Structures are given as structure tokens and as C-alpha cells.
Image 1 (cartoon, rainbow, N blue to C red):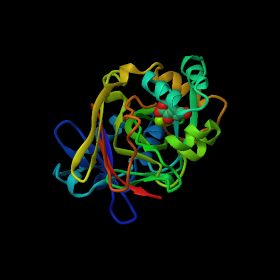
Image 2 (image 1 turned 90 degrees about the vertical axis):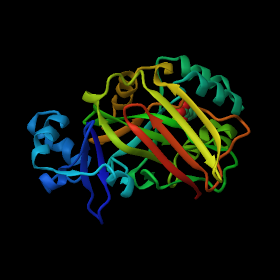
Image 3 (image 1 turned 135 degrees about the vertical axis):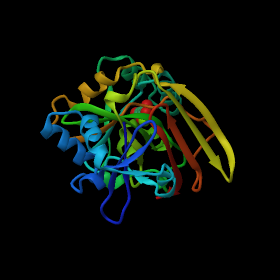
Image 4 (image 1 turned 30 degrees about the vertical axis):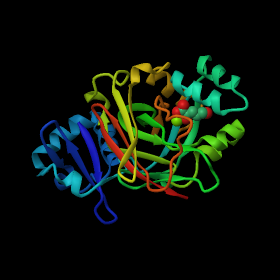
Length: 290
Ligand code: DO4
Ligand code: MG
């Protein structure tokens, strides 16, 4: 099942999508307005989120699938924190080495037991589908990073989403200690359009992922890859993320990029970035300078 949060004034509505239909779960019970509400209900009932949603579908309003086009959903997770793993694909390791004055450290992290896991964003810095993603005014070289996002509740994997770890390559390339500034700033992260429940996804390690970047109607970048190119498993990254840290009840862990535009490319204000993940959906955003 896929879960979307539809914007409705200040209170969102939670919508579940099966292969054929769209169900307004908030119409079945006003107590379910966010994906987090569903996670808490499932935890109390000791059931899976899909089992709860299945039960509520009988009382839910069936919506036309056009609703998702007409009312762009918000970020499907609106609390907690976003963290990210890095250098989990060979292409990312090669790109960091090329941009950095200290290349050897990226090979080390790609090959070592301990993965790179860093803080990425709070909800206030995270945008959803069709909202603007940011590039920093003090950065010269910026890229989107399409990533599989793992959604966790109390440290357990409950679903998957699409993420964009928008990054400054010039700031990180200048000195790796500037990583927090290259990665964390206004509108630095996008997630959505939905969360696909973990129980309904075939294999997160074998999903097609693609990205297009358009400028003034012209497609500048259009490439695809598969998550099976990842050097590490989702479970390994999650274990490292939650180890020795009281992470918030809800968190999203991005799992690293495997699509890197050519070195000549940098994002510009107005660019449109779309990232798709098989079995989950497509996340589209327009770039704005912050
Ligand atoms: O330190 C580098 C960050 C790398 C990253 O974000 C990625 O590989 O996706
Ligand atoms: Mg990344």
C-alpha cells in the first residue's frame, strides 16, 4: 500500500492507494491525518500499517485518482529527522574523489565497515512534491542526489520513499569538514510523493531509479540506475543509523546516490528535477536559490 498526505488547510488528510483505488482514510476516522498517526495506531494495535488501513478501507471515501494530480501531496513524513548515508555507490565515491582535494578519504569510507551516515534535515528544511528545493547563494556547483529513502518507526523499517539529497559539490569539494554546510540549509531535502509500506515492496535492493533535469523545457539530464548497484544493504545502514543514538520515533534515512550528472553540470534556479523509483513513485521539484 502507498500512503500520501494531502494538504487541506493546516490539517492534512491521509490517503491510501492500492493498485486500483485511492481511499481517504481520514474520512473513515478523523484521528488519522498523518502517516505518523497511522504508525502510532498500528503500534498500539500491534498490527501492521497495511492491516489497519485494510480494515479502515470499508469506511473510507473512495477518491478519484485525479486527486493526486490536482492536490499535490505534501511530504509524506512531517515529523522527526532526515539522515543520509553517503558514498554507498561506486559512482558517488568516484565523483567525491574527483571534486575533493582530499580524495583518499572517500575510498576509505566506501570500503570500510562503518558507513558514512550524516544528519540531513529537520521537517522545517524538508519539502514535498512540487515544492521548491534550494541551492545555496554562496555555492557554485550544485546537484540533486536521487536516493531511496527508508522510513523508520522506533528504529524499525516501516516503508520506503523517494528522496533528494540536494548538495553543494563546491562547498564539500573545498574541504570535507564543510559537509554540514554543503548538505544542510533551507529546502535542502525533498521526500515523497508517498511512503510505500515495507510489507508491500518486493525487494528494496532491486528497484529501478531514474532522474530527469529540465531547463526551459529542454531535458539536460535523463539517466537511470538500479538500487542493486548499492554496496551496502538497507539493513546495514539502518543498524548504523540507530546504533548508540536515541533517534526520533519517526526518521527517514536516505541511502546514497548513484546518479551523478557530469562535472560541467550545476543546478540553476528554475530547473525542474524529477526522480522516480519503481514501486514507489515520482518526486518532482523546481529549484530556487536560497
Ligand atoms: O560525503 C559525501 C556525501 C555523499 C552522498 O551524499 C551520497 O553519496 O549520496
Ligand atoms: Mg547523498
